[in-house]
Length: 44
Image 1 (cartoon, rainbow, N blue to C red):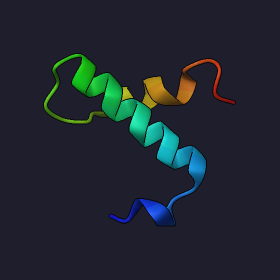
Image 2: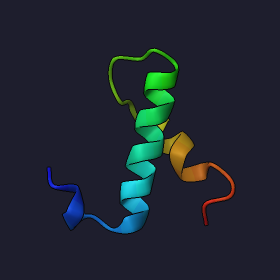
Image 3: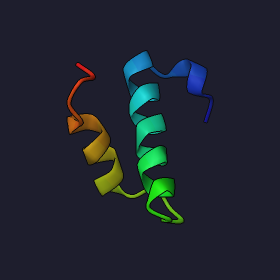
């Protein structure tokens, strides 16, 4: 998947979700990581 074809907001959410997953030593990106990244305050 080419990230340059995604909106800036979606790129940010995916990056945050990946950071959450790796920060918790999870091997895969799960829907809960995406949800947490979407509802994370301060990025409206």
